[in-house]
Length: 88
Image (cartoon, rainbow, N blue to C red):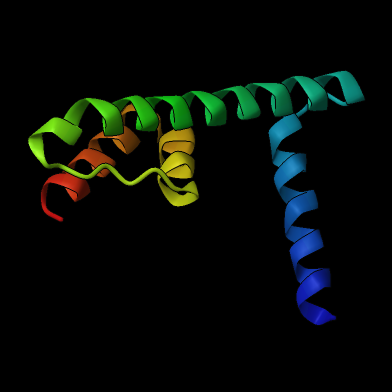
């Protein structure tokens, strides 16, 4: 039960940082829509990379951790996943 309370408070704190100084449901939904769009694009990028480099016997991991890394970090996340894939 304590883990659930701690998790919920962290999620609320995260959404509080997302909206910043602006207050309103429109801003929250806009930020969430951008986050989900970036998340979907990162999965598409990972899947396309997996298909392209499969011919060279390189395995690109298409999982939630990789997608979240790319979503949160952006280009440095792509570089991190690329380096991890090469040194696998």
